[in-house]
Length: 277
Image 1 (cartoon, one colour):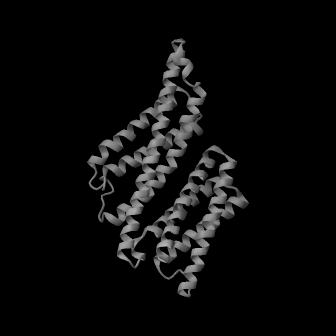
Image 2: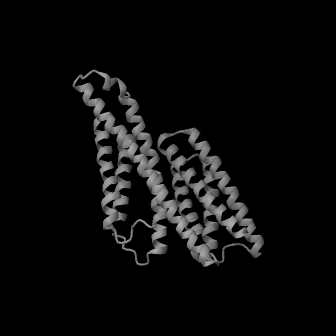
Image 3: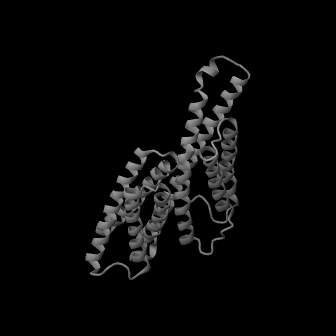
């Protein structure tokens, strides 16, 4: 029972860390200090949990946990979280903090869901299944964010067309103003991009564990990274190039087509990416 509880606590820590990364990403591109503070306290809580696990393991084994690759991964993750807290508190370099946490999350996920570290074969298989569940859930949530972002861009284009043709009426009144539609579309893309990135990290780990000799040119993998790139470019155009209006809405609409292609077509062409019951 104790091992099961500790395993669940590790999984909870990974999910908590994922939320922390999402908030840091939002602050990274949007300069939102409230998101930064929330992410910092979540990260501090993750650090406390990690430190408790570390001392618990040291007390159990009677040595410093660096003699195996899995112990080294966990200690490495702890070091990255510690450095991230120090950098965030003292230097406030958002770029370094965000990417340090991406690396820290990746290392922690690898350690948590690696089946080789569990003595029970049943527990190992269950952990891998739960890794797949978290991956699919995060991927679908990111697709949901992209879908709503697309809807707001579509409404923006409709509103833009009505205003340009001076079609005043009930439809125009019921639609939100252009600025609000564009802002909501952007915010949902901000939510979807880091969530998809974390889903890809977890998905690649699952594939590495369950699909030996996995072809990296698999259509589902290519499609997922193409999708991530398309929406990253969308954010880049919005933030760095100050692009707005109809052109940005059209780019978002085109990016959503990749969501549909990746979800419905590339999954069928994939050599391993199937729906499991």
